Length: 149
Image 1 (cartoon, rainbow, N blue to C red):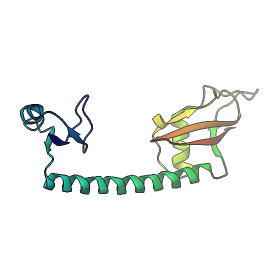
Image 2 (tube, rainbow, N blue to C red; image 1 turned 45 degrees about the vertical axis):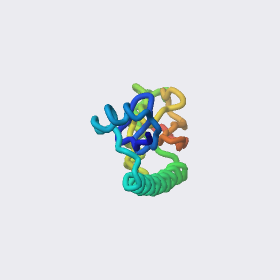
Image 3 (cartoon, rainbow, N blue to C red; image 1 turned 90 degrees about the horizontal axis):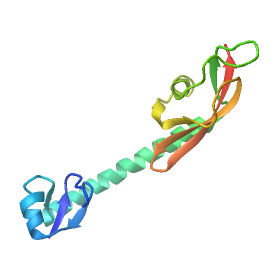
Image 4 (cartoon, rainbow, N blue to C red; image 1 turned 180 degrees about the vertical axis):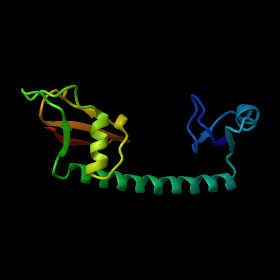
C-alpha cells in the first residue's frame, strides 16, 4: 500500500514522501497515529502542491543566501576592535560572537554565531579568515581584520 508520510518516521522516511508499506502497517499503525495518509488521488494532488511550494521557498532562500554571500565577500574586510598590549597581542581572543556582531553592524545581516567558525586562533593584530556555513552546501569565507582599540 502506498502512503504519504505526514511526520518523520524512523527507518521509513521524512514528511511529504510517498512510500510503499505493507497494508497492515499502514492501516493499523501509520494512519491511526497520524503519521501518514493513504495515497489516493486527492492526497497525491495535495502532496504535489506542497512540494511545489516547498521548492519555491527553497529557491527563494537560495537566492537570499547567494545575495548574503556576495555582500560578505565584497571588500572591505570586517574590522574588529580589540584591546591590545604594547607588543600587539590582544587580551583574550576573537570569538564567533564578535564576528557575528561585526557582520550585523558593518554589513547589515544577522547571522547566527553557531554558523561561524574561525580558521586560525586569533591572539594578535592582523588579518584572519572565518568560515560561515549556511547549510545545504552553501558556505563562504569571510576576511576580517583585528585592529587595536
